Amino acid sequence: MEKELLLVGLGNMGKEYSKVLKALDTPFIAVGRGLESAADYESVTGIKPVTGGIENYLSGQTVRAEQAIVAVDVTLLYNTVTELLKAGVRRILVEKPGALHKNQLLELRTLADRMGAEVFIAYNRRFYESVRAARKIIATDGGVDSFMFEFTEWSHRIEPLAKDMEEKERWFLSNSSHVADMAFFIGGRPKALEAWHSGSLSWHKSASCFAGSGISKTGALFSYMANWDAPGRWGVEVMTRNFRLIFRPLEKLQIQKRGSISIDDYDIDDTLDVSFKPGLCRMTEAFLSGDISSLCSLEDQIDAFDMFMKIANYN
Image 1 (tube, rainbow, N blue to C red):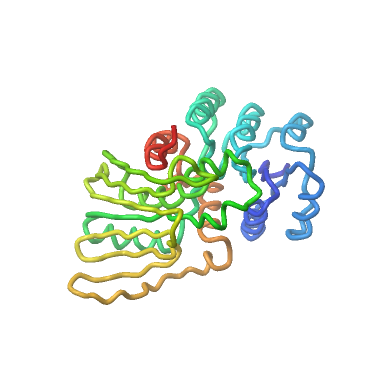
Image 2: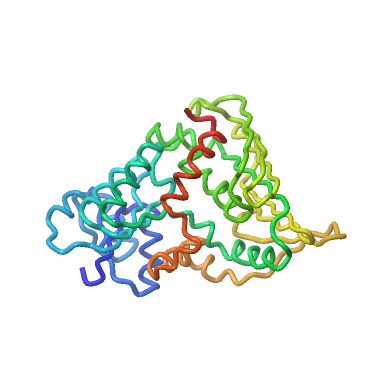
């Protein structure tokens, strides 16, 4: 444990983090549960992981890990972070949404405060090169006047997935919150929000169609919509005085200038977003270096949770 960095979880995201950590020349110990997932992980990454689960691993250690990246299944995030905090891990980057229930996030905050630890939620879309470029444009054009976003999900793809039902029932938190977090990261957190819902799906009873609007703490008006039972895709559009900035897909940036109907591709250096899972390299690098300026803190996620619940129509 030379660098005392743990990577917990050997699935797709664990493999993506491994690729980034190897490129950053950062030693780490990968920890998973089953032998089958470990064999698959090793065949892809060339790294031999520790098996038996994080609880078993931590119980056998006399040297404390200082940092951890958590990329386990959504329903296991809360328990995994809890175990790491109790073991004295001081800095943790955990995949979104951190936990599926607000009381769990509050318990993590209490535990983190008691242990003198920091916990961050891994919303990697904040670190897209498209977002970084757009924020520079926004800063030079007087800020965001208004914005809108769409978080339509493809129900026909999600319904047959072999995932825990709780993850599906809270799919906005498990997945769609990526779009909302990105939009509010750029345009400002809501000061007021009204939400409407209709429909339901066999795997998502709370709603299938979502719409809403509000005003951000910076004074920008916003709106959103999504229909999970119709065609669509994720997207964000941000308006400043002189520009409309369009993210569709989110990792690309298009721009429309005042007085023109032309929509043009905006040139960005997206080398890192092409070489790795988009946003993941810069986010991981920020976490490891201690640059938390664009990271979503546990406190940020707690503040956003009621708003997320309102958007998704969860109890």
